Length: 160
Image 1 (tube, rainbow, N blue to C red):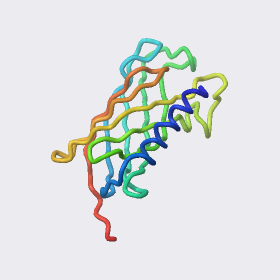
Image 2: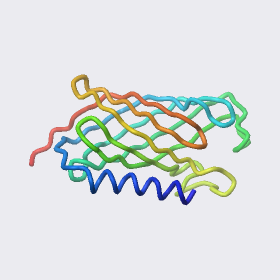
Image 3: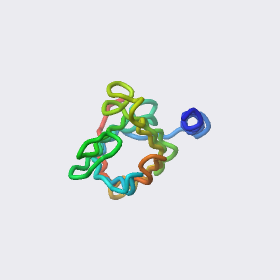
C-alpha cells in the first residue's frame, strides 16, 4: 500500500509541476460508469460527479459511489456491495487529466472499519472530447480491477 501511495503522489506531482500552464474554465461533470470485475467475480454500477479546474485552472475533485445489490459480498458479509471514493484530478492538457481517489465513508478513511475491509483506491486517466462535451474515464484498482465512466461536461462561466 505504501508503494501505491508513493506512485499516486509521484503522478500528481509530475502532472502539476512539470506540465505547462493550461487555461480552462471550471466544469461540473456528472458521470455513469461500471466496475467490471471485482475480485469476488461481480461487476457494479457507479455514479460520480467531478468538479474540474477549481485551483489554478488545473486541479479538481470527484466523488464516486459504487453499489450492487442481490449478491453475497463475502468481505462485508452482506447481500450488497457498497463503496465510495473521494479523489483529486489534475489536468495535463486540454484533453487529458489524471485522477486518483480513496474510500472515504464506507470502509473508508473517515468512517468504517478499515482493518476488516480493504481501503478502496483507484487511479486513472481522463479524456475529454471538448467539441461534444463528453468525458471518458478509464481507471484501475488492484482490488476491483478496471473501471470506466462516461460523463457530460457542464462548463461553468466565471468572471476574472
